[in-house]
Length: 89
Image (cartoon, rainbow, N blue to C red):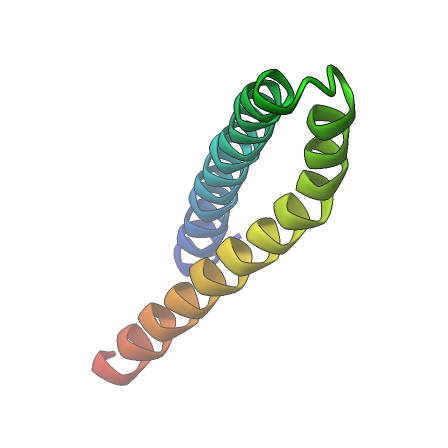
């Protein structure tokens, strides 16, 4: 394997680690916000688990959309950096 191929794999590995970390943190934030907001609204309206469960189920597609957005943005940045590097070489 050439040195440029090793560098490319190293960059790809780092990008994947960053994407997985960002997606994991953002998913956790979506879940926590859903639970806390749901519990608070259930306390206000006296509908114990209904709003919390509804917000948790609504958080699933929100989490997926956030994951896709983060992945697309990160990959676009990577592509831009690779194009800049190829132009300077």
